[in-house]
Image (cartoon, rainbow, N blue to C red; front, side):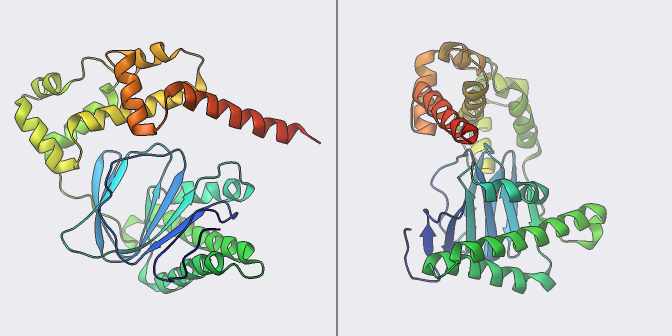
Length: 297
């Protein structure tokens, strides 16, 4: 286990509990916009952040539990000099039985739950215990950490159900006001991103804007450049095709809207960190290994 005994700031990446744990007393704006293949939970103890999730920007404050589903484009960034204390959980071991057991609870909480004031002290104490157990590694620490997280998720899922049944009785996260035109552009891009004709110029013309105005306003509202956003949507789709189809890399690059296989390869490696073929081989090797393990009596 990697550990630092500062109880206010630590990063535990090898816990054997089925999830990673990160606690921060201060946060920085994420240096990049990204997505990943696993669920991420982010609980805000105190402070404020802006959070870009898929196609909307939210102002998040204390008591918010954000549940980021796999391959959802996101980025958190600070509001001026506001310090934000938070707790992150990463379910990066997708084959872990514990992860599979709590997944329905996580899905019930998505995309977010605002924990009522009456429950916050209790839930925050359980987050603290969860992290401390894994940090200090005492007897049965993994069991205790999982028990704490399970209770948190059950309570949060129940609040999510209550909020859906009676929205007026529960606090909600209000999306940050966004330029109405850019909001429409985001909706448009999430449908048409895979078309090779979906360029900055063509999109600007479609919405009756100049190229420079769309580029400037898009970056100001989303903290993405137009090309960054479209490329991330295309790569997210390509990952799905690499895993779920036997199409060639060339076919996938064309289906996802890239002008050439070379361009696709460059953007894929920039975002994912490996080549498309290496990603596919790794995925099938891991799943074949998991299948063999399940088949052995």
